[in-house]
Image (cartoon, rainbow, N blue to C red; front, side, top):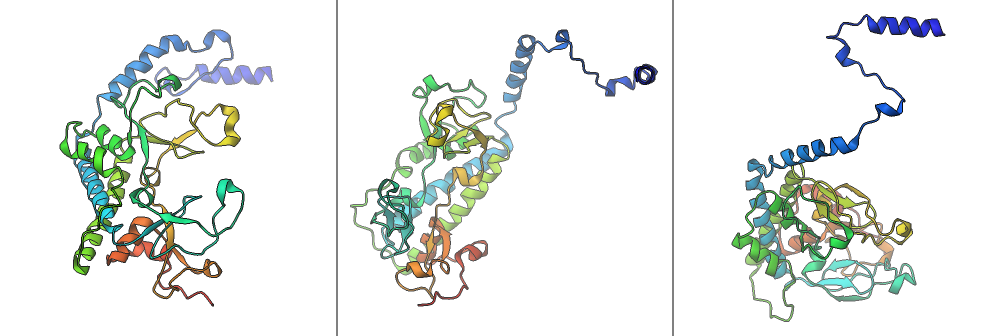
Length: 330
């Protein structure tokens, strides 16, 4: 065995210097360990040099389109919910769009004391159709990681706005300031809905559905360039190269981790949640019953709302909505 090792080493020693660069030799001696204190300045310098590559000029127009689509989406939904009632459950996140709530027994009840109960419906708002997702606002993309004791020193803004800001949108943009104040908060439901004709409602539904598609496709393009993180155990989102260290994870079975988040790469659904709801087709009864729950379809809340206004639903949603499905037996 010793002779074999000597022969192997002699073969390596015969390798020319030009070819030896492709080989790595590892040692278990303590003096061969890397000194991370010496490498730290080099790593920080590399991060600082990387920050000069952002924002990417080619993505600035995409960020502007995303911001404009978001404004159009909120304006359209805030008007449509005055003509098509939106209902939300009092005890769970279930949402339904229609003249009245459905009778499908999927509610866990008050504090999850019961299971598979009929929902307790109350009047919903714009945040039930477009789920708000907030994140910490960073002064610059590659800044120091937010510690737990610094969680109140940073503002919380919509995640889409933070993504657009990191993409190069000017903070003093009047369109941006309008989005952070009025369009992110629900409108006053006490205002009388303005009368719109069927043609105007259909046009508004088409524009709102188009804004929804532009928003999602634009966010997907931005996520290819600008990193974002989401906790794998809760809905916390952080727009930046690494997640923050604020211990706010609300999953109780991971309480031993002291509320620390477990970050993974975020997707479009994490920043723009589709909020899937039950969809009532033409062949379904006026009120959806629990006996036909296996036959009914689903749809994103925005798509369902726009379809009720008269917009044509894209074919990619037909499978989810079961447009040509059979009627539930009585």
